[in-house]
Image (cartoon, rainbow, N blue to C red; front, side):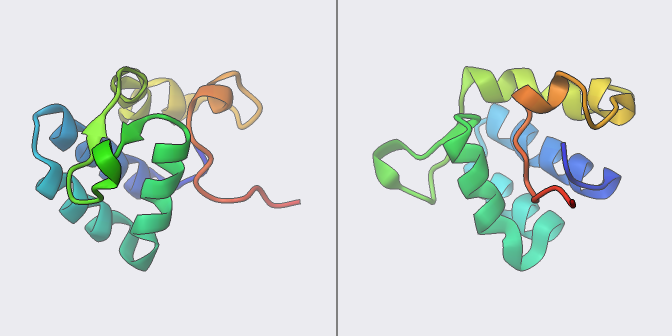
Length: 101
């Protein structure tokens, strides 16, 4: 994933909130972790089918099965923590920021 450790933890915590059925907390944690970019990051998650917005309702995001599988990869000691940037993991995790170069 193309984000720093703190952002990865924020994303993990936000997705875990959705997994617990707390969409309001998800939105709060996304804002805290990504600031003004949080809605763009959420759009990337929706586009990647990690999160869905049933009926287009931005206030009621829901975690998909694909999103549930993403959570362990965001753990501090999970595959994303040590995976090289060219790993297969990048094919499954959303690219939040454009790559340099």
